[in-house]
Length: 471
Image 1 (cartoon, rainbow, N blue to C red):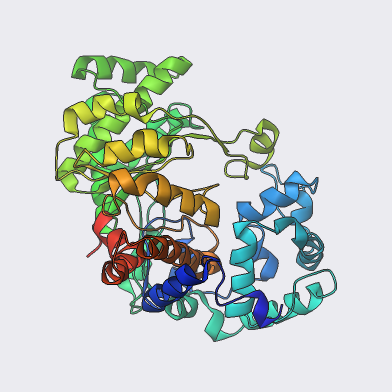
Image 2 (image 1 turned 90 degrees about the vertical axis):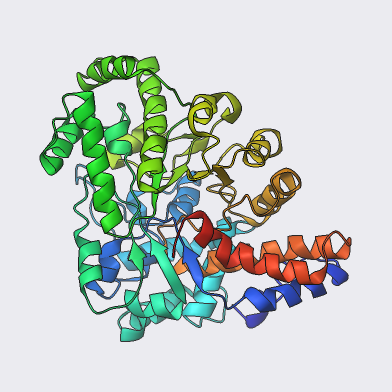
């Protein structure tokens, strides 16, 4: 890859007037610290600070954006180095996996993954020629050798990336040992956790009943009864808060909420606890739990993130063989107006409640999400997310929401990634796209340049801190 392939004007408007404005705005935000308030990196990387193993383990195996595309072209997950749950597949040679990846790198043309990966290869590893079958060995050896040096340990990269705060995401059953180790050590990097209660709030989550038993063992509460179950959740939320959490995260299939009476909720819980619930009862229980979580957020001030609209693990064969998060999440239609109304009827006017809404259904941006966030004090819009954390997705998000919700009812940007090295690339992309959007408004005299400069900084940095209540 030559330097020209990572062009300094990439992602800026092609119109020269707007491009000049975007360049100026970007120069003011390019080097701002990274606030990464929602993601899925492994806290063990930072607690143990061990060297990353090899390029394949770091850049291919954990990144479902990467192996999803390769799988779509008929390349099996086994050939990409992933091990099935039964352990029946043999570990693949990482150099052969890398060669396979490099030989198919053309598949990523036009995708955000290509932009992120090129950024990683050039900015982080100093590689200056295109990745291909012919250069695969040179890439692998260069990355492998650099990963073995102290400068490429997780903590050193964290500091090099200028990350101010990084949030990981953990199950309510996690002991948060790695976070405790980070907090008790002498490293000053700010790595916090996020409370993701799905394993104990979704009756269709695997081993749900056993998870509730484990929740009881962790808390000493009787999770056979609804009141004890809620107390156990409150206790775990507090445990997460003590380990730095400022937010919860809820990956429900829909945005449905409910506001049952205490008696109705307890009866429903008895059914789901026994494992006898129908599909509709499971959905109603998840809906009720979103409202219960909102009530708890008013108590403990954790920001509530709702990520609905994904048909998760759509590929049943992959789910059975490899488990969750194998790149088979598919967007579905989502009804926010009716779905959220029970929760909003109860809590929507509470200024102390903070709910960040995400979507995989772009049709809801201007019709539902922007009007909702433009009215209810408790609602903020999350950035374009999985499938839409892309140049065109980000532009559409801004153009569809800013006229009704404005910029200040949005949560800036978060990268939502497992791929640690892509974090600066993703934030750089978001900053470039937002500067382009603002440049258009300046060129059309809808903003003056001073306003755009302030907004560019807020979108890149301060709105995320504000939305996630990060000090």
